[in-house]
Amino acid sequence: MKTLLTILSLTIFLISCKSNAQESKSSDIEKTKQADVLLDTLISLAKDNSFYSSKVDWAALEKEMIVISKEQDTIDKLGKPAELMFKRLGDFHGMLMYDYKVAFNHRSENNGPPNDSTYKTIGATKINSPYSVHSRIIVNSNIAYIEILGTGVMQGVQITDAIDEIRQTICDLKKKNPKGWIIDLRCNIGGNMNPMMEGLAELIPNADLGGDTKDGTNFYSKWSFEKGNFNQNGNSYYKTDLKCGNLIDDSRIAVLTSKYTASAGEVVASSLKGQENIKVIGHKTSGLSSTNGWFVLSDKWIFAPMTAYYMSKDKSVHHDGIIPDIEIQEDLDLDNLLTGKIIDSAVKWIKMGE
Image (cartoon, rainbow, N blue to C red; front, side):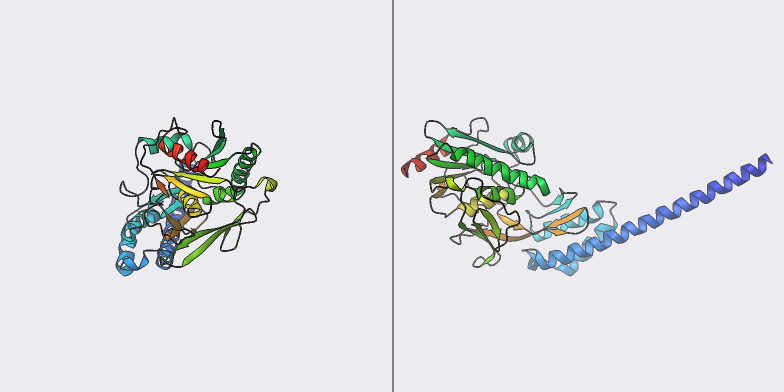
């Protein structure tokens, strides 16, 4: 009897193992199929939307990407082929995101903000929350100062909270009747442009902001501030009422930039460049001055290829960063942002308009 029970137990165990192995194999096959579908979708979207699509031999590249995918496991089955694709396209601003975090791109020391100790400090200590705004009145000159940092990839309530914080900051400063404004983007290494632009609409309720371009002549998409909202091609995604409409004025606004100002930070600089009563002052920006598309591949994967270059209201195209109206070479001192040649130049220019 004992021997029979042992045999039965062993048989059940073997059947269970075989069943688990079959389930595991079936699961692996399903994952491979899903990865193949995602890869096909990625390639198709890149062909149709990448700014640099015409640069590559897609037939050859697609074969290489499929081979690389088959050699990988898990996340790399899509990521590694995408990494090769970005490299072949020459797209150093595009990215593949997994669970709203950058998983793969093609970035090097030769493009984007310098990956030095200052940049790492900004990334580690300046952006310590989904959004961050610092403000004060520069006492000696009665000028309102707002530092807007990168806002990261945000969703839902985070975006509206960030918009509200920027708008409330502007309203609080306006109550002090400043003679002018400084918007400091020198530590803005990018993220989501919508909270920054929608927030700043509190300060500049109506303006033609330019947009981006594919051909270097015509706008591909148009941006504007209208009645206190940021519009893209006439649509506002985060409609917000003005918090302090009765305090709107036309004081001079200085926009400060550095070589670390990147991506979404460059959207702000490009949009405000060429506006009446506004000057961009500082260092040429990092060179991530291009729009990324946003294509949802699955519940985890997002593909964001570079699709167009920023173009200001005056139709100046920013292929390699935004060149300030008043260009000043100065190392960024994170501990003393309110001193130095750039801040002095901004204060001086604002005072000239009094």
